[in-house]
Structure formats: structure tokens, C-alpha cells
Length: 194
Image (cartoon, rainbow, N blue to C red; front, side, top):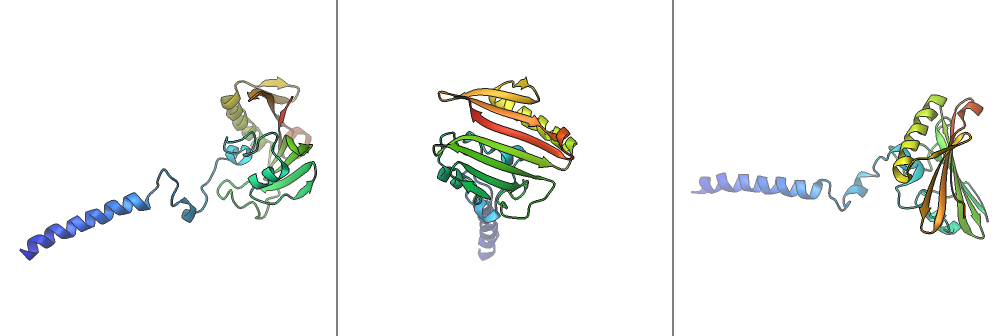
């Protein structure tokens, strides 16, 4: 009788342990357990533009300098009453490593511009090792912005996407400035024409 119970109890305990381990140790939709594993890798487009919760990198036009500072993962490199500037590593595997060393060939800078204490424009310059890398990223960003805001319009050496956010007419300008440099360089400008 004891052997028969052991033959039933041991497999039942093993099955319960396995099921509980899968339920509580695996991925969950709530995000629990992610902090222990560290930040997740992000796409390069998401690293550069944000996760779509704001106008640009989780900010909105009209935000105060304090709100913008709180939205970034590091202190600004330069600051004054109308300007916040950041230099960031282009690290999609460790997006929280913003205070790490900057690769002199692959990085980006962000300038947040304010008027009367409110965000009016965000400029991002993306520096890449080669003009071919810049051309590939330009294509990826173009596809991303077209999917979000419809077809862009070519204007001189830039592509411009127009869209509305609330009652404001918004614009995103993307240009490949690599021909002017010995390396890859893209420029993104997020602004309102109002």
C-alpha cells in the first residue's frame, strides 16, 4: 500500500512543482520578474524615438524642463533656461547604460529647446560609423514614421511628416547629412508649426 501511494504521490508532486515553476518563473503579461532580469533590449528606432507614449522620447510639446529631465535616464550634459542637451550611447542591448562610455563612431545627441519654460522643439543628431549605415537607418526611420503618420513629403534634402496632435500641427523632419561629413550623420527634428 505504501509503495502504491509513493508511486502516485511522487509524480503528482513533480507535476505540481513543474506547473508552479512555469507559472511563476516564466514570463508574465504583468511585467513581474522583468526587473530581476535587467532591462530588455530595444530596437534602434525605439532607442532613438521612444516607445510611442509621447511626442518624442516620452516627452510632449509644452512639457517643462523638469518634466523632460525626468523623462530621460541621465542628467543633461548641458543646461540653461531654454535648452537641455544630452549625448547618449547607441546601445540597444543595454538601453539603461546611458552613463557608460560613448563610442565615438556610434552615438546620438538630443537638444530639447524651450520657450517660456515649455518644450517647443526636439533636435536629435545621430552619428554612425559610415554613410551606408546612415542610409540603412534613414530607411528604417522613414518606414517607421510613414507607418505612424502617413507618407512624408520630400522638401529640399529632408523628408517631412505632418500630423496632428490634439489641435496642434506637428512636423518631423529627417535628413541624411552624411555627404557633408566623413561619417554617417542623420538629423531628426520634432516640432510644431503653431
